[in-house]
Length: 305
Image (cartoon, one colour):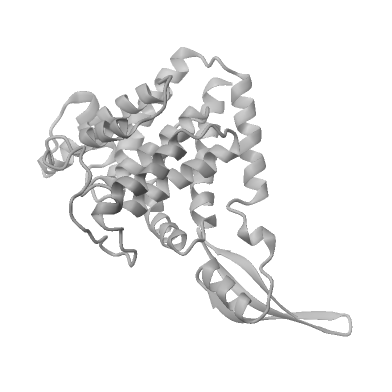
């Protein structure tokens, strides 16, 4: 009897074709083939008449889902949160999010240097003007993001333009806040972004998802879609990764979740998860983001309990 199962190695996932045999009371299992993504495993299964277990098609493990729902419910029970604690947490998020999001994109400022630039207005020797601007711009983008979280109406295309304009302010003013008007490639990725003329139409799905009213763990799924679709469409010449992570947080925070950080040390796993999502396997990306959402919930619960 052959079946397909998901396996985890470190922070990455893969799939195995396993043959199970019984000899008397002893059952042995032999791995026949490995698949790097669910789509490849599914294609093999379809071709050979095998059934993919339903749990493998779920975006998130049930255990993680329960933890997120339980911890969010506990955090909601403590609202309104102490203002002093919220202020300290927001200040920490500004520094940490700015550092990690920029570092993922190659910015060389350390966490301490990012703090010095944002809180002390210092210039760091050996670091470029662009790297300094990326830090100060990102902090200003977070300030605008927080205003959008409390916005009564829907998030609009112009809101996203304004957010992107801040990300590239003084770095690439010609492209700041404007959709790209050229076809682009993503270095180190096999995924080819859509043609530039299709960008406005494709971004409508992102705006619809940003205004999705689903809450609890469904909001995490929604945030994953916002993040992935922004990266996949690659609507702007530059700044798409930073924008995607900010919009992910916008969706989460409007659903009551605390702000969440994808960390620099997760960079390789993060890019691997995006590549698997390109092949319709969203489990690795959802689990990565879900785990970071749980870390954010734990941080807030510890601070306000």
